[in-house]
Amino acid sequence: MSIALVILAAGKGTRMNSDLPKVLHPVANAPMLIHALQAGQALAPERILVVAGHGFDAVQAAVAAHNPDAQVVLQEEQKGTAHAVDMCRDALADFDGDVIVLFGDTPFVSSETLEKMIAAKAENAVVVLGFEAADPGKYGRLIMQGDSLERIVEFADASEAERAVSFCNSGVMLADGKTLFDLIAAIETNNAQEEYYLTDVVGLARAHGLSVTAVACDEAETMGINSRAHLAQAEAIFQARARDTLLDLGVTLQQPETVMLSFDTVIGRDTVIEPNVYFGPDVTVESGTRIRAFSHLEGCHVSRGATVGPYARLRPGAELAEDTHIGNFVEIKNAQIGAGTKVNHLSYIGDATLGNGTNIGAGTITCNYDGVMKHRTTIGNRAFIGSNTMLVAPVTVGDEAMTGSGSVITKDVPEAALALARADQVNKPGVARKLFDLLKKKKQKLVSEAK
Ligand code: UD1
Ligand code: CA
Image 1 (cartoon, rainbow, N blue to C red):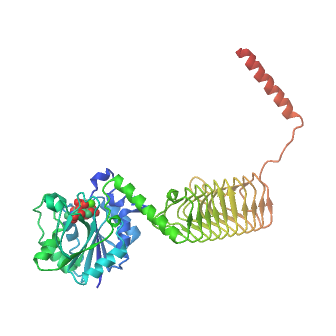
Image 2 (image 1 turned 180 degrees about the vertical axis):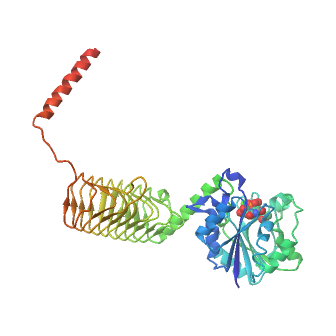
Image 3 (image 1 turned 45 degrees about the vertical axis):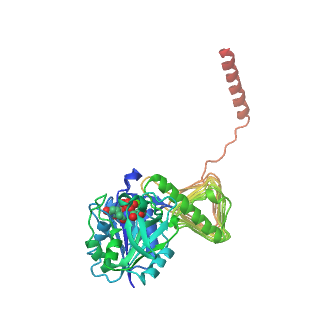
């Protein structure tokens, strides 16, 4: 059976108190909406539709960046969840299959749970995802009769007895597309919020003699984010799970709770992550590496056997080959660092290609930006860059070349050459002593005048 994925993401999220549409607030550096999208995509849907309204352009851009095949549909006015799904009616007119509805503000539904719903769909016209809530609060309540879901009642419309029910609606719903849109057409707004409730699909389906059931999942999966406090909780939940996953995969985290990961962080086994390391988006770290304390990585690739940090910063486009050493207070951006090459102290390497077995002295800077344009620095194999060398790009240093400490290199250095680009040293005999005596006398005079 083919599947169409519909994600509802048009709401404003007033309680976020933000200019950014709620569904774009990030969890682990990806908009919460993208987490829901990823879970749904695991089902290999034939169609993907996202219903957007508030911040339409921004939502559309975020979706396109993640999946250009997803279609973003406009819901101009937010008249309720059923109305939102109805916005996909035309786009799915020619679709023959099941429709699964997810909420963009509910990022943790797992694809395994969605698979369970698909299994239950074999014997039911409509399947709803429910959960036992520790604190049911304002969630919609699932009114069951044995295995049959009779109806869903929204908190605002529920009686005392119904509010006492703790089996709640997650918002995820699965139904045959034709059935779903037929039932939605019959939904009215005679309820406390005067909205078109998607939840009314259940009662209508039962009235037509269709079978409806609920699949239960863990409450942690159904958490809906409505406020910054929820967002912080969601981040904590994501981080805790992602750290546990890494530990299971054979990665050592010396102090797990201090390591921040992104939605797409990949780390190989037998890698050691010291405390207080931050992984931004798009980082891959191979097996057997060591990321030392207080390092910040994003958009980079670290190969087997490398060591990074403490206090290193790897920015987008940093590619470290095997056995590289990147030390303290070193920043690498858009640069390939060859195998076994060492950049150990206080350096900036940007827009550069470094060969294998090269040593970069402390305080070396690639001067990559002239105020208008960026330029590349190329350094060969087994070169030795003296401490505090300024490499004014564009510039090339050949294999096995050397630069003297403190040099400002503005011209290419040929293979095996030594480049010295600094003022010659002048020694003036006895002058230091005279200067010291003079300064001491001055100080004495000032002190006695002050008395
Ligand atoms: C909804 C459910 C409730 C369930 C809860 C779970 C309904 C009527 N109620 O309530 O049973 O327990 O979710 O979190 O479905 N949206 C639109 N367009 C609209 C309205 C909403 O796109 O016109 C989107 C929102 O952006 C959000 C999602 O649908 O992503 C849910 O809407 P929300 O208003 O938060 O529903 P709840 O009141 O939480
Ligand atoms: Ca909600």
